[in-house]
Image 1 (cartoon, rainbow, N blue to C red):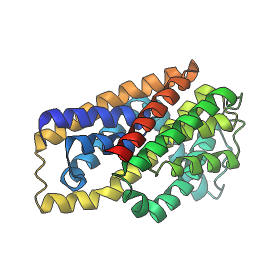
Image 2 (spheres, helix red, strand yellow):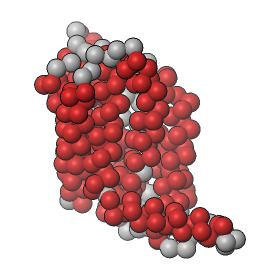
Image 3 (tube, one colour):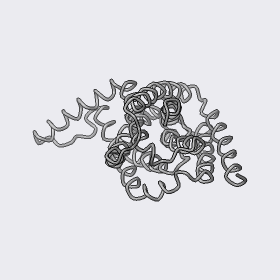
Length: 279
């Protein structure tokens, strides 16, 4: 893989990870048309996840720091015999809700990861997934949203959004789109919906990174052919484009412009379906 390809893949990963257009689908399509086999870029794609983590940590650094501080306070309360006290304050409640959302995502991801991995390069399946993503975005934009914030959140909301995120293991289904749809369908106000969607992406993306890391290490040992400079370029590009995508997504949700992403995923999905049938 050359430097131009690493830059393009980094841009694709960074943008599509946080815009509601499916990162797995876009990476698979990009690799397909570049003629790059997945096993040849395994190390690279794993490190791209690290790049997108950098971007989200940078944008939400204050929220993340507050959640980590509250986690320390939670341990102190448990040690002192005061219990978890999940609703002690908004930060602790938010942290509990993030954990609750992560559980169904982790369970379904571990159970069905191999199944959907086998469909990673299936353009017909990816095209259908993009059509589903677009339809969900359209529905959420038209009928979703409300006034709920952290105070009004219930455990059922967090679990429901966790299942929405787990659904995004399917190639072509957007993770950020699914969680955004789940938040708006749960009557969250738009700022809270987008904030919660990105915060729960952290354990999801980190989990994917850690899950794929052993395979990447094995590939390095076997001689992956990916140069350190190519990796660094890809990580940097993914981090920068991820930062841009997060800002774009926040703006799109607040200004009620998710419909444009629905149109995009419909168009790309139809093109992929037609191509897969007649190519």
